[in-house]
Length: 165
Length: 419
Image (cartoon, chains in turn cyan, green):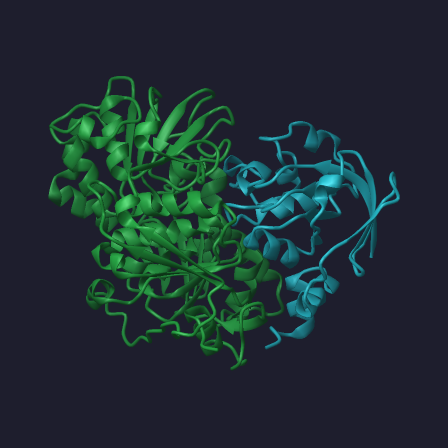
């Protein structure tokens, strides 16, 4: 899968409370959640995000609450993948489980807001179309690749019939 | 090389006998937990699976606690989703208005040493105070696992934290965990288990252990472990938990790091906005007037927390203009606080006592902050907008500082209001 989009750049420790504040958690409707995505740290995000756009952040992205509403809101906003130095563990598994690609890259500081990126998810290669520079993401373990290929855990289980052991 | 508790418990629950940190395995859970927010989403995910049937009606606990008593129509519908699901599948453990999940499950005797627990809430590591391996998962995880009984897990590395020495006056588990988070940072234990060891543990009551294990999540930890010692065994003795297995790490187990904390160095801590790692000694946080003090949550809504707060507040008045909200974590704790006279103490002082709920901790209801307001809370997070408007501030502390600060109207050491 090859993705292309513009960068939305954020810092370290972006918590799930700012990705989607708890005052909106009385619904799990993705269309409703996306209207408020990132609004406590970036009011422009929900208004200006375009399909395919890519979030690039520092370390510990998605820390705090386990709310799956956070990756759901991001995915529903049209974001095609998230690139960060590291992810908080529950956010990471939630993203995998709903089929939102998350890539771990050490040198995220070289990406700027608005940069156009081309991302090869299978190969983990990220090309900055503005500078031509390439970065390489850590490869996910095989089992997680299978979940990605099924576009999430629900389809994986429907396909497998049950969890593989 | 020997094995850690985490490696042993996961091996016990998987079909892979030889595993080590970093492996991703499927593991069979002893207990699943979800609440009105995560559980309602999980129920909808469960419905998408082929001919779903719950794997074990005795091993799924659903607790309506976040927006309960229901704050609005949408939250009432979410609670109804898990209530109806529990009825449809005859789940043995559905609780509503009985308390906050992480205080309620231990109280009900659903948690025991050696279990593998998947909870759709980030503070699930709380149960490690009882020697269980409890990991936070998401709603899709929960929805799928309600069918399969299995979750996927990365076997974590383990950080050993040795507690030495003894507690200073007024210091509780909250101060110890804030102190630890200030050292290792908010991602210092990301993907790791934290195993607490050392003779300093024997002086910690269960409440402090729950508080510490609970907030290991604020350092990113996957799970936490306390030893199953006499204090722990006494706690579970009258809960009819049945047989259980105690796991300990081998002496030659591979820990990724070891950290020593001398409890004599741990004073009263306050985490200032907007990270739980921004920790200062209470005496270094001065002249900050408060609009609200909240004593409660899964972190510090235990009877012992209310006892400490009541001891300081008894016979005094809350600073005029400050709102004191006290939230016992469960109905049973509420009843005990009533019997002990703590509820009278809080109300006579000018505070208000709420039914058990997660409520204001996550900015849900029962104490939301307006723009520019400042609160001190015994809760677990002080992120931007956590308790209300993004222009409000939350300071985190233990029950003694919270109680003293409610009297003084500003962040205060308990010694300054006692006597």
